[in-house]
Amino acid sequence: MTAAPPAPPMLRTVDQRRIVLDAGGIKLSALLARPAHVPCRATIVALHGAGMGAAYFDGPAHPQTSLLAVAAELGFAVVAVDRPGYGASAEQLPLGQGVADQARTLAAGLNDFAACHDTGGGIFILGHSFGCKPSLLMAADGTVPGLFGVDVSGCGDEYLVSPSPARAGSWKYNWGPLRLYPPGTFQSSSGLVAPAPRREIDDADRWPDLMAELAGRIRVPVRFTFAEYEAWWRRDRSALARLRDSLTGAPRVLIDHQPDAGHNISLGWAARAYHLRALGFAEECLLRKGGV
Image 1: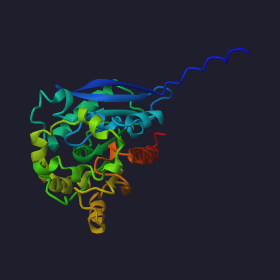
Image 2: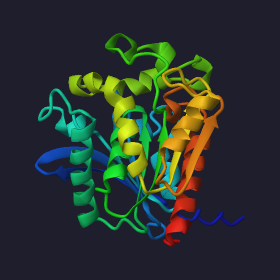
Image 3: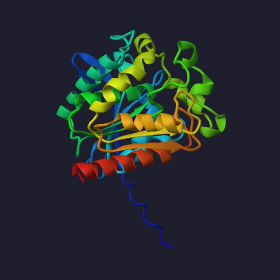
Image 4: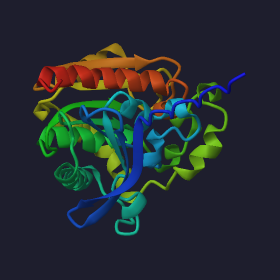
């Protein structure tokens, strides 16, 4: 009997590494994943919520929850950035930054990234929770090169409850039922949890007023996703109609709901379904832009 031929080497589909962005002298750490098998279609910029870090998007408990993996496998580059006050910038910005300063710092870092890397058809921002706020402000200000769409989850324009520091670490508001998450989620997530910097917590109450001011200036498509067990934000019919109507300059506004998910949507079993929907929206925005 002849021996079976050796199995062919597995095709490496994703290149992933840590990088640092220069945001006007502020160092922002980030995770970069790129497709190794095809040219980059476009770049997804992922911005985490309060008290987390860039690894929120890297499937710490289960590979299928990783945005970086699924997006790169589908031909997108992904740069998940530690927002100002987290990661490499924590020592430089021990109190963090408010929304407006974060938007300026992140835009500077993304301009640095675009100058050094191929972004394909442009940049698409995916924000979660507090990370949605500088995302939407950058879209309103037009400060990100080649921006063609924004996808946000865990953020609206009117709170159900006040975002007090006492509630910031609440299980009820951030997680929902335990069954929504892979086993080991809370042990593996300990490495990505970080104290929320003081300035962003202090700035949280001002968001409804800031959103009202910036909404009409956004000129790219926007998609909002609310998890089934979202407890921070109003999402009744009248609230969502008002949210949609406020984006008067956006060529397209979608509001979606993700079943079987809590606020930390990218850490749960529903993460892959949410990420695929977000990437589908990115594809639609890219087609509209003419970048396919």
